[in-house]
Image (cartoon, rainbow, N blue to C red; front, side):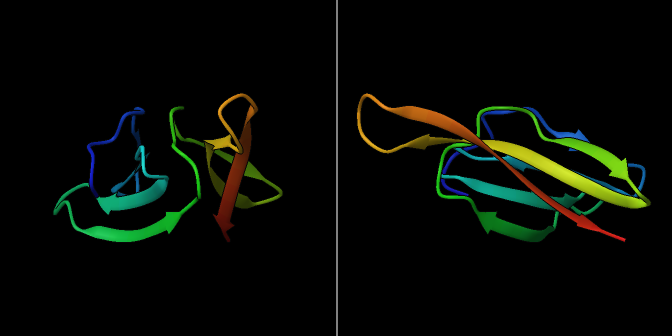
Length: 84
């Protein structure tokens, strides 16, 4: 990571901690060791706290990234992934 997480963190009962960076990295670390478990480049700064929810027996982890196409137009995109 180039910068510290700007958004908050999400911790789970399974010893995972999720967060994001201004460079657009959405990542998970082990809450005990602090070891980086995975990281995804989203293509936009992550400002909002990650969330988790369950639907039809599948757990999802989401973040919102900021999209900047030019200096005027901006938007947000929700990114979700999950495991059974």
